[in-house]
Image 1 (cartoon, one colour):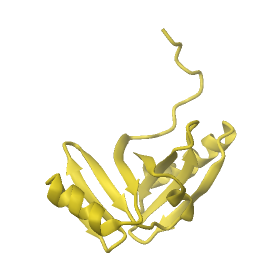
Image 2 (cartoon, rainbow, N blue to C red):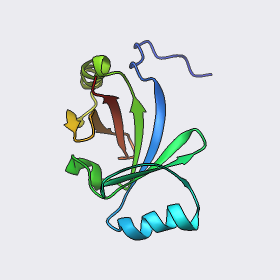
Image 3 (cartoon, rainbow, N blue to C red):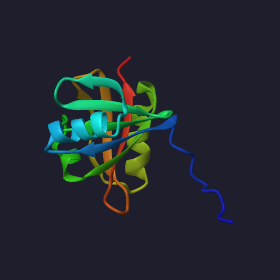
Length: 130
C-alpha cells in the first residue's frame, strides 16, 4: 500500500470533463453528435461543444483562449472555486510544477490554469467567475 502524501491536497472538487482538441470541428461534431448519438450539453459558438456522457462531459475544442492547450490532443480538467484558484497555482508552483498558463480568464466566464502531467498531457484546473 502506498502511503498518503504528507502535502495537503489541492482544493479540487471533481474531475469534470475530457477535451479533444481538433482542427476539424465539423466532421468531429458530426461523428460524436450524429454517428455516436451523444447528447448535446451546450455549445459555445464555433469554438467549443460539449456532449453529456453519463455524469461527465466530452468536449470538442477547435480553438481556446490559450494556444498552450492546442499543443496536446487530450486534456484533463478539474474544477475548483474561484476563491481557490490562486491557491492552486501557488501550490503547484511550490511543488515544482511548471505552470504553462494562468490563471487566465476565458470569454465564457471562467478562469483556467494549465500545466502538464508527466506524460505531457495538458491538465486544467478551472473555476467559474463568481
